[in-house]
Image 1 (cartoon, rainbow, N blue to C red):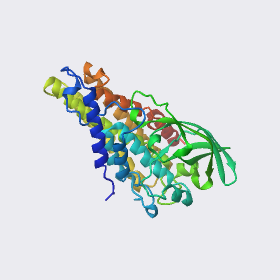
Image 2: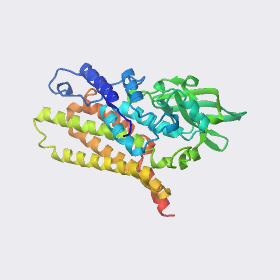
Image 3: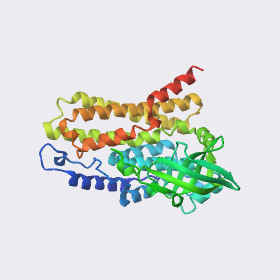
Image 4: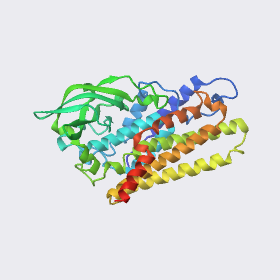
Length: 373
């Protein structure tokens, strides 16, 4: 048993989608308002997820999945988190994205010194943590720690989180700094065409003290040198947490597309190629992510295996991209309407696929370079 139950989170995300879709619907026969839209994401405010969805994520067990058992967590396996994150992404891409990155951030936080982990999870293991991987700002050494200063872009879910893990530099060293949300000024800068409810805003920290126990180095993360469990290099798993909710969103897009085709044509005849290809591509993507997750849980992760897992994540993302582009084009002119459920899925997925963690040419080049040495 994994202890993960996302029933409430999925129900809340679906309810939000249905309600917003009803508001967006029109009465003309060519619009998706005539469809069953239970799996379609809705237009969303820029300031984050509804409270009911946030509460559902907090109660799901995802946030505690990688937290050490001694601090109330499950100290769980990567593979056990995959299906719930896919399912939540299918219900709502923004909800799945935030839940997945918060789950990953909790695992990153296990690299903190023991005292820092006790501070972080002192009130319980279901803590929402936002994280950034791109170094920004500066950390100036002072007695007992650092003074952190600077802006950080694209911090998903920050409006809902109690803490943030921010990547920065201190001299020649790159480090992650754990800071409470109250030390962060949140600037409303997220105005993307998709994933709007992720609230991926800019964070500004001004001369905030970070104790030594609230920091770890990037090298520790890269090599998986955390305080509990078996070392797992971060590159072997970090792309999975971006790809999983997007796979779920693509599955939701496929189901919505099928409903759309049945409504317009009365049958799926004439779109059998797209249907078959989509089922095959997404099945291959899911198998690839599942295989990578099991390698992370059970395999010996040398450099070659680590980069191969990264290629699996990026290749799965490439299959998702091919699928969603194909389905959007095959949906017909109705799908270009901004409120159409297929269009909403396509915007969210396309936005998520822009993340550098899912860049296949870069992942492939790094793997090829290693294999040639």
